[in-house]
Amino acid sequence: MDLKTPLYDCHVALEGRMVPFAGYVLPVQYPTGVIREHMAVREACGLFDVSHMGEVLYRGPDALANLQKLLTNDFSTMRDGKVRYSVMCNPNGGVVDDLIVYRFSQDAYWVVVNAANRHKDVSWMRENLFGDCELTDMSDSVAQLALQGPKAGAVFAKVCGEEPPTGYYTFIPEMTVAGVKCLVSRTGYTGEDGFELYCANADAPALWNALLEAGKDDGLIPCGLGARDTLRLEAAMPLYGHEMDDTVTPFETGLGWAVKMQKDDFIGRSALAGNEQPTRRRVGIEITGRGIAREHCDVYLDGKKIGVTTSGTHCPYLGKAVAMALIDGPAEDGALTVDVRGRQIEAKFIPLPFYQRKK
Amino acid sequence: MNIPAELRYTKTHEWIKEENGIVTVGLSDFAQQELGDLVFVNLPQVGDAVTAGEAFADVESVKAVSDVYSPVTGAVCEINEALLDAPESINQDPYGAWFIRVENVTGTVETLSAAEYEAMPKEG
Image (cartoon, rainbow over all chains, first blue to last red; front, side, top):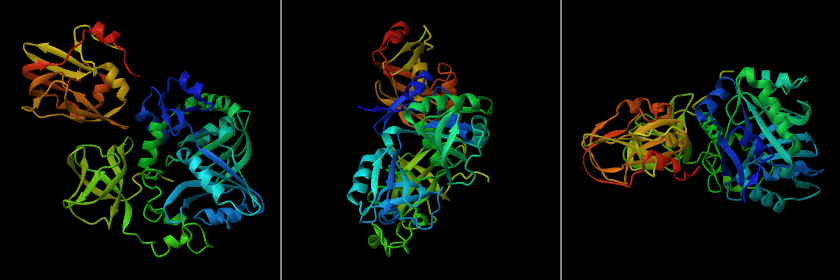
């Protein structure tokens, strides 16, 4: 039985097309359609229900030591009010999940994980918990809204008199937004500036409606999972289950920057040591022939299979079809093709990210 | 939902128009709404054989690819090349945006009148 987020009735009222996703029923799009929702986020702003994401609280004198052991990034240098991206590895160096960590204080952190991995993650976290540290899965009582796009700041200012977090990957633990108590972070998964707002389930519909109303004149529209996926893909952000999984290392999928081999021992470190420059790697591909490559399409260089696509779509903002792929060996010159449902379609390697916002 | 009375329909949401032995095929308004914003169309070539009930084209939205099924068996005598550059016209004008015309028709799937198609339960 799929769960409803606290915003389910709002989506239905907006005629969202509801689909099952990661154990929840969520809108894949509204009547506006994926392309307009995607473009709204690139050019104005969009509002997403991401309440399905999981939130896990680490609290206690050994909270930091736990994160240092469990995760690949280094949190010893982190200050209160900062957010840091990390990977969580298994002992083989494969990725259990990717996530972001919020530091409230030296003894309290929030870990935000992928909805699809929440139960696996929490089991793994409990299995590895040590010392004086308490772990609480708060996912079921926390709603999350993402306000994303160049106009996000202007819309936010209309519903909150306080100064929002200014630096990218920072947060303010308690703000009052449209009368609702929220944690607000300057984070997102679209390649644009924006905020993620966490609040109590019961307050979520009021916050959602207030934001939509406040942003009307700025072009704010509700956006579904479809646009969330095309936006992250256009920005070449890896997605768990696509660009990485339990068998892919963070170095292979291009997340080596979030792995700090020089810090004290962490789970997966010994397997990753010496494999910082792997043969397999994540690359960007543009489809130059006619067609759209999705995930699981074989990639050929001069007729020889070199890998497989992990995600692909037609990018609404760039106006072209692109894909990410894991290939064995470097992206060398040659005749690149992708097998799309039995047809070999011409392609070429292009640098990642496909899209980067102008700062 | 727009279901012109003068056309016939398939259970797989294609529309059909027959004139002087030539069958024109497109996608219904319901189909284009279900598929969402279309960004790519792959069509057969003139002269290709199509078979009733089998895929002859595919359409892709930003999210997914879907087959389009031929209501008839015959030979493709014309394709709507304009669709290749403007797949969004299927969303904008589903009954103007025809896919192919078929001649030498020797077989057909079961087709529905507009009223029957409208009454048919459709999966949302």
